[in-house]
Amino acid sequence: MFQVSVLASGSKGNSLLVRSGETAIILDAGISAKRIFAALDSFRIDKEMVQAILISHEHSDHCGSAGALSRLLKRPVYITRDTFSYSAHKLGNLHERIEFFRSGEEFRIGEIICEPFKSSHDAVDSCNFIFSSQVMQGRKLGVATDLGYPMKLSLTKLSHSTTLVLESNHDEQMLIDGPYEWHLKQRVKSNHGHLSNKQAVGVISQIYHTGLENLVLAHLSEVNNHPGLARRTMQEYLDGIRSDVALYVASPSEPTPLIDI
Image (cartoon, rainbow, N blue to C red):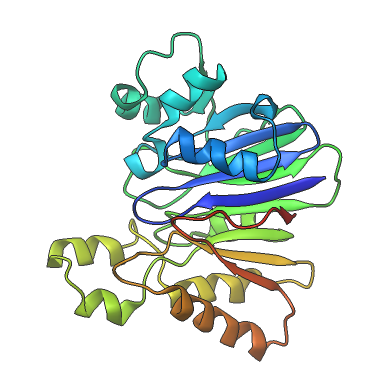
């Protein structure tokens, strides 16, 4: 068993569950511990299975409840040193429950192998991740949100994923016509901001392979995008290449099903 669920994803809060056998980890905790526990209960996953909380970067929509979750579960927070230096005030006093990792260096939590790699985003040490399982050989989960720009490194790492969680943050025209101030529009569009729906298609066009079974569009803006639009933009491309990839759109308020990686 090797599964993933995007518990919540959007501009207001992000969290993701990865499970392999008797090991579960939470990637990012930008929603309340109460909501995370409710999702675990809905999947009939015991909280004791959660071995760690991983943090991708210091923005509050990814780490806001990590400290509370760590204290409630009595589990460590895995984080880079630079990210910790920018987010320690949000995490609170965790004492011994901090484990540092480095981008580019693989580490293991129970049955789950974690491979962080740098992402182009306006954070001090933003990471995307590859996850694999010790007991499910040949299966690979790629998670790339807050991507900004798909660097060659990102494309290389995400290649050959059997399941991929990929940012599809905004529709370019909705962003331009929308209510954001101009400087914020420029930030979102920049190489250190967020991927648009079309850019997400561009990523898939470069890394698609017949072994890709599941694609989850994530981190949709509630102001500058719409789930139906993001889905349609990607589905048109997948239909054009006659792909039967299962396409999901993550919600800011409800978890996706548990997806077999």
